[in-house]
Image 1: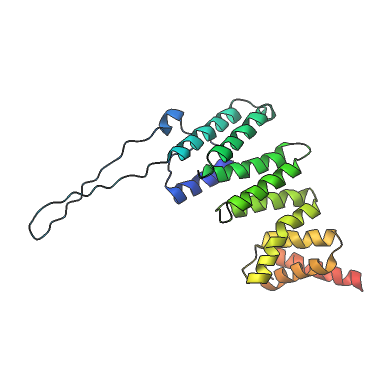
Image 2: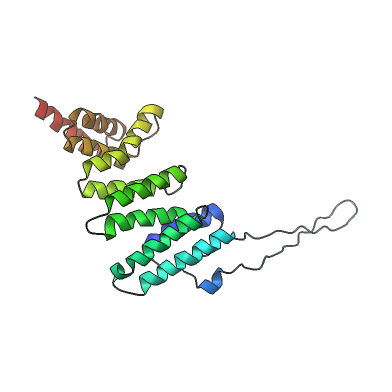
Length: 238
């Protein structure tokens, strides 16, 4: 059974590094595949034929090893209906990928999955561990294709749990990036940042965020909600 939570990354993985083998294939299939050679005939002025060899992509040793551990994680998940019972083993396996194979693409997903474990699988959530692993991820992979997904995972969970101060740490850089570079803001995180300020009583900062959304996305649901929040702030100030 292939877990839907892994499909997104495996597709990204296939596109970015040319790995078309899935982490859920049997371990025997993770062995290096034979290289293919394609003969290309080129006719020159002297009618001679030259052969050019075209090699297929071959995963590195680190990529193959990380895939093997990832496959073991999926086996653990599928081995029981009580995920909590194997959670320590799953967590340890993700940490192995991160520490032993940091250059392998699956290391980045391992950070994401650990954050999900700390925020969603533990009760109460392990906020400090999630924040520490998030900071490490951002430091190691500032241009990761998973950056947006990881940001959203942190932001969504803090928003749902009303962890406003923690939420500001995640969302404020998004606002600052827009203000400093005039980059198109990520609307959802921009809105969450304004909401955090509002719930902490920072109404002036909240209004700034709502106004950006109202100006840039006036016809979207977030834009309309932002307009409503601006009106509410003004009413409370009168």
